[in-house]
Amino acid sequence: MADASVRPARAADVAEIARIQVDTWRVGYARLLPAEVLASVAAEQAEGRWAAAVAAPPSPRHHVLLACEGQAVVGFVAFGPVDPDDSDDAAGAFAGEDEPPAPGAVGMVLILLVEPRWGRRGHGSRLLTAAVDLMRADGSTHALAWVPEADAASISLYGSAGWEPDGYVRALDADGHQFREIRLHTRLD
Image 1 (cartoon, helix red, strand yellow):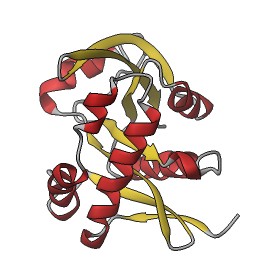
Image 2 (tube, helix red, strand yellow):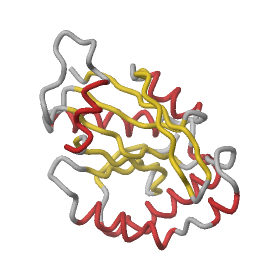
Image 3 (tube, rainbow, N blue to C red):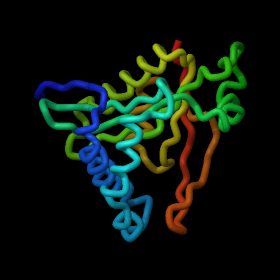
């Protein structure tokens, strides 16, 4: 394998992040969503959101990291603290623990994608490890992620790192088509 690394995203990476997101969704979610829904997602629309996430994140605890193989960007992860509006729901993931997380100590992986053609080379694991390391450095003691219920590859990735489903499920609407996500959680200490 060529040189593999993880680095912070820069403004010059925004178009590539958007392209990877759209291309990966079209391949990886082809079984989850109708073709017309996936075809309606455009990289140009995603670029604006990614430009803001990279250049002006909502907090110092929000990050976007890239997986690289040589000079090629092959995947990315975006993460930050759980939104304060969702903190009560997030606490439910850890309700059975002797020491539930302190307010503000729960991190959230918002999205983690590796282009399918670059899959099975450890890029997803490197991204997840780097995200967890930064969440810890930012003061998180616990972490959550929502993953499509039918996305066996992502569930396997998180599971191999010790993340487990906590029983929460949500249904998302994509242009009138619903799909389900499950919530995974882990302790970071």
